[in-house]
Image (cartoon, rainbow, N blue to C red; front, side, top):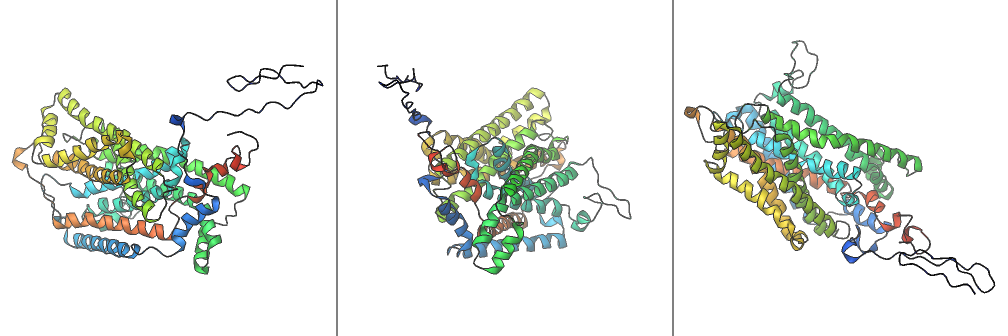
Length: 497
C-alpha cells in the first residue's frame, strides 16, 4: 500500500495518494490559514447585511419622512443664509467700507473666507478621485457626502471674490473676469492671479459636479424604481438617463468614472496651488515664498477631511448608519488628518527657518510679528488647533472615540480658518512704512456675512440628504463579501477564503 500523502506546513501535498487497488484517491483539501489577529481588518459593512438591507438603509433616508430635528435645522440654516443675502445686498448698495478694511489691510475676512471654503472642498475630490485610483475601498461609505460638500463649499467660496471687488456689476460683466468678445474690447488681465482663480475654481466646480453626478446615476435609477410618487419617479428617472443596470451601462459607467477620477486628481494639486499664488507671486513679506503651493494643498486636505468628519459623525448617529460608516472609516480619516496635520506643522516651522536663513530683515520681522505681535492670539490659536490637537490621534483609543474625534475635527476647522486669517492680515497690517501701520478689526457685517455662508452650506447639505442618497449604494454593495465571486458568499465553491 502506498503511503498516504502528507501535507506540508505550507499546505502543499507532498505526493499523490493511492488506495489499496492502485486507483487515485481524491486530492487532499487545502485550507488556507486565517491571517494573524493583528492583520485582520474590520469589514467595511458590519454584521453581514444583505444587499436589500443596504438599499433600504440608505435609500430609506430620502424616501421616508425626515426626522423631527430636520425641519428646525433647515429653517435655522435657511434663515442664516437669508441674512447673508441681505448683508451682501447691503454691501453692494453701500460699498466695501461696511467691512473693517483699512490701509494697509485691504484684504481681510473676504479673502480669508474664500481660501477657507475652497480648502473645505478639497476632501471630496481627494476621497473620491485619488483614493479611487489608489483602490482604497474604504472610501465608498463617505465619498458621496464628501463630493456634495465640495460643491457646496465651492458655492460658498465663489461669493467672496466677487463681492470683494466692490462694484459687482463690473466683475460679472463679460470681458472683466470671463474673456468674452465685447464692444469695448475689454479683456481680463491674464497676468493677475485673481484671474487664475476664476479659471481654476470654475474648472474645479464643473469637474466636481460632473464627477458627483456620474456616481449618482445608478443610485438615481434605484430611487426611480422604488419611487411611490409619480413626481419623484419622473425626476429621478429623468436624471437617471435611462439606466437599466445592463452590462453595457455598467461598462460605460466605469469608464466614465475612471476618466473623471483621472481628470479630478490633478485638480486636487492645481486648484489650491493657484489659490496660493494670490499671495506667493507678490512681494509682501510673509507671502513671497515658494512653500505656499504644497503647504496650501496639505492644509486644504487637512481642513476638508475635518469638515467631512464634523458632518458625517452626527449623520451616522442620527440616521443609525453605524454598520455602513464604521469606526474603521472614522479611524482611517483620523490618520489622514494626522498625516496632513504633520505636513502643515512642518510647513509652519519651515517658514520661520527660511525667514531666518534668507537673511531678509523684513521677512524675519513678518514672522516674528505673527507669533508675538498684536495678533499673537490668532497665531497661537492656529498652532493649538492645527499642530497640537491632530497629534492626539496617535492613540487608537482616541481615534475610535466618536465624541473626541468630532471635537478635534471642529478644532481643525477653527484652526484652518485662523491660519488663513494669520497669513493674510498679519502680513498686511504692518508694511514697509511704519507710518501706515494699522490694526484690522472686523465689523458686524464681516462677521455675519461669514456666519451666513455656513447657513448656505448647511441649507444645501440638508437638502442633499433629504432628496438624494448620502451614501453611494452601488459602491457600498461592491465592497461586501457577496459581491466578491471568490468569496463563499459571492458564489465561490470549496474552502477558499
